[in-house]
Amino acid sequence: MSVKRQWTSKIGISILSAALLLTAACARGPVEVQTISQAGINPDLHAMAIREVRVLQSKGQRVWCVPFARNASGVQIRGNANTWWAKANGLYERGTKPAVGAVMAFKGTRRNPMGHVAVVSEVVSPREIKVDHANWKRNKISLAMTVKDVSPRNDWSDVRLESQAGSFGSVYPINGFIYPNTKKGPSNEMAQAPVFAFSATPTQSN
Image 1 (spheres, one colour):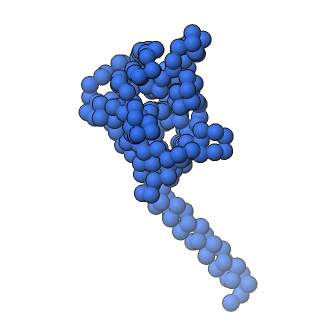
Image 2 (cartoon, helix red, strand yellow):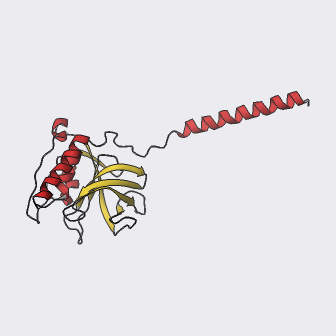
Image 3 (spheres, one colour):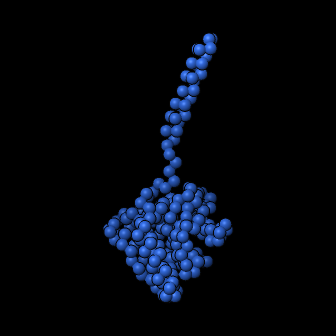
């Protein structure tokens, strides 16, 4: 084989290899972590929810997770956090995949009987997110706190939170995620309207 023919053959093989790699990449498609909702967080609601917490703190009043999550997400559900998952049924889409703007609903346990709710602020990876929430640390709001999925089936049924920098605490059971896009019931306008309903009584969270 001449040098010219050998060089042409190598070029042809290189082009063919590149074409095959490109085809394989297209067949796989992009990796999509946030598959449920692309709506994200409404910045106006989020800012207003934070301001309302600051007002309560300045007055020495209690800060609860439920009002903050409701105001920041637009998910119009009332009552203790451990009731949100059931109450969302038929009103909001629910699922096991995290999405920015969704409310992560914690189950009630012996240690945490009233449950907890937090708003997803970032999806870092299929098993790691960041959340904004209130009263995880008493009377405070925590922004961009890292949460890791530690469930055996990778379904976000059990999580650990980075309550302290670099330190993840106990395992907490999760019902799932409530997505702010309504299925039926409240209109979109109602879902976006912040409602500030706070209680100074420690036994209530709505």
